[in-house]
View 1 (cartoon, one colour):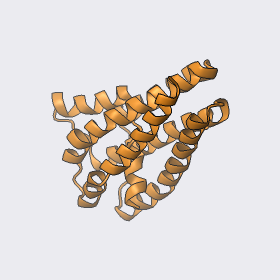
View 2 (cartoon, rainbow, N blue to C red):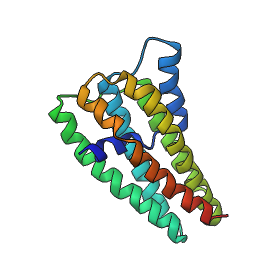
View 3 (cartoon, one colour):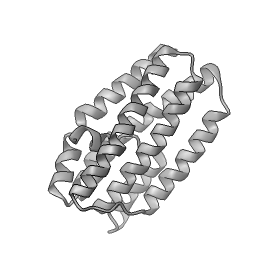
Length: 178
């Protein structure tokens, strides 16, 4: 259960990550637990969609394996995160961040749909590397400090090895594209 909920946060878009960080840096409107939950669900859906697109478009085996891993992990996350939210009695709540994340995800998909071959592979994997690098910082410096529920906070704290694993896998695929 820990792995699945925490992975949900792993693929936040860079612009949405900046929004989250900005909420805590420049105002008192830090994300609440229900908003963190919605950010997680939205991030999962964006990464599932991008992963499905990548798995179907790429002919590069490393990119395909990575995309399939993202689809598999984040589909599982959505199923299990729903169960965790129910257990914690947390109803996900939209925020400017989750709406921005959805909008940015839609733009990413549109961009990726217009690419093919090596250009597609590079854009997809470069984006995934950036997601995972940025999320480690945001989880540690924004989401963990703002999570009020002890179980949610513990789940976020246990995310380090998972984020590192996805980042390393994405970097391995990225290196194979050079």
